[in-house]
Length: 231
Image (cartoon, rainbow, N blue to C red; front, side, top):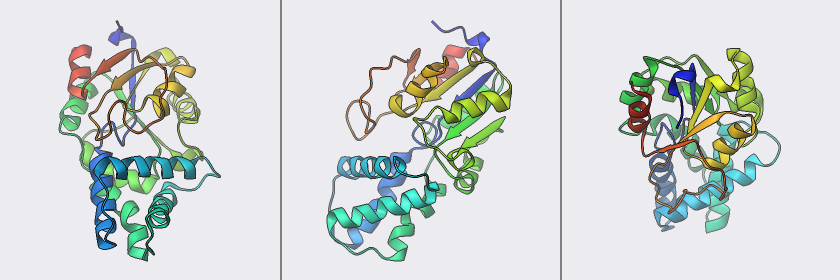
């Protein structure tokens, strides 16, 4: 059992945890695929997206906007069509329209009554700015991949957050959907973690690589976390 009164801050992954990234990705990618008469099932699209994204992020650092353009270019190569500039821009231009999960705004407001909230995201600053208003709360800090030049599962997001906030690892609870991208590096630094086990169109833990990490707590949504924290 976690002692929720021991935490002063909660850090959140954004896309996949607060924002329904699968719905956003599917809407953007399927529109392009349909234009080129490529018919894929939702799980095929999401698995392909995740694989292409991971390959690009494993190389030299590029801004996430260029990662997304690269993902769309790889869809084109994989499924045999010549992408237009509009096709390549479809994903980066869609991010600001990706919807929040139904529980996100209410639960963040509840949690903000007790904790200082922080974003740790594999995103560009300008892209997160498009999302920020939809979340409805103020954040103590926002650490993006663009700011630090690396992507989770590197520990860099967490190291920078602890340093900027001037807190110990025991004061920060990290809340995220992806075990591989978030819970592994967070626990490597001694943080406690809460797994928001969102439903996915891909069975199991979604599209992230399998890991044996054990979160400190598991909830189905953010309201469940707020309930456990007693706020």
